[in-house]
Image (cartoon, rainbow, N blue to C red; front, side, top):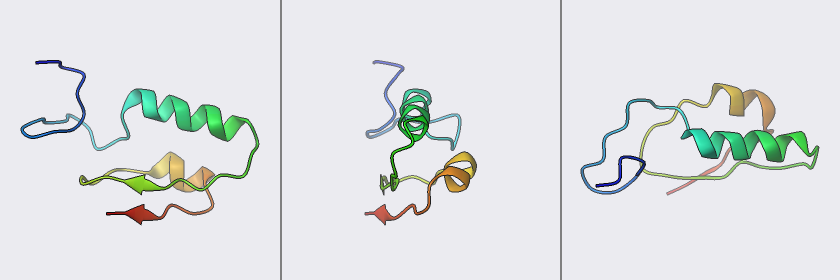
Amino acid sequence: MNSQRTCGEGVDRSSFDIPYYQQRLLKAVYETGTPVLLVLQNGRPLTLEWEAEHFPAIPEAW
């Protein structure tokens, strides 16, 4: 089993933060200065402190 998986049946996570590589991507997009909305499509709770401070809206699609 790949220990890097972040979704699927029976996959536990040790943090509620957005996964590391997704966080790096968000920060890189933010640093371009292009206006962006962060749209979440997930089935788990997330902590979004940095994201809430830097994105004007965070809609969630279930």
